Image (tube, rainbow, N blue to C red; front, side, top):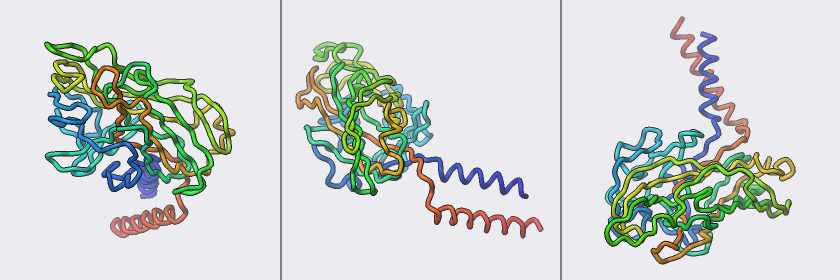
Length: 327
């Protein structure tokens, strides 16, 4: 009996304090969660039949989703209905997909449309890592396409004292969501122009502003978490074929070269700002748009005493019931 209760305590404690927090909850980064912080970004579908979208007008097959089991085979990621996830196979980070739109016309991500930053409220204490699902629509290779800023402060909603800013490069830490490999008749795309892959980068230059004003280096972990084959599509992919893909990026603040003096411990990650730095409205080989699907953070914060007391009270009541049942 004692051995069983000890095992149960460990299991519940691991589940409750694992540290992953999916921003926006089970419905992800919905319009109601983002509120007035959208900036130049707009909600769009991954795969509409026409108009804006990462894979507009494409026929997608042979899908491989590195998923936690909530996506059916041969389905483009879709959070409609709530609770749908994608899981990074290397880090086991879980992302909650956006639950907006309708079952026939779901909205899946936020697409850049200008230079005004999108502000995503976070409000989590002692964040050690932040993970984003960021991809580029089109995206010329080796261009600084996306700025990601993390603002830390003394409260969940403000008092910002430090900002950590990363510049992501297409083909470096962020990739085009379409990897064009073959041109058909009348194709307009140059399949060698786009940054079609991403990889973990160490020693990446990072800018810091606030109580500590300096430059540093850090690590961004980039992993592919979804892929499939496509054919067709609208400009610049009209008449092409290849692969569709989604990547994530892990920002580990503890790898910053000056982490020990930066003073992030005890601060809240107030918000994350995403800026599309290489936005172009045209659909051509030089165009670029940043797309955000989800954010998950890891927290080192100790649970509130009331939370611990509530859990222990529940375990005590369960143990009492088991003891009565056994006796």
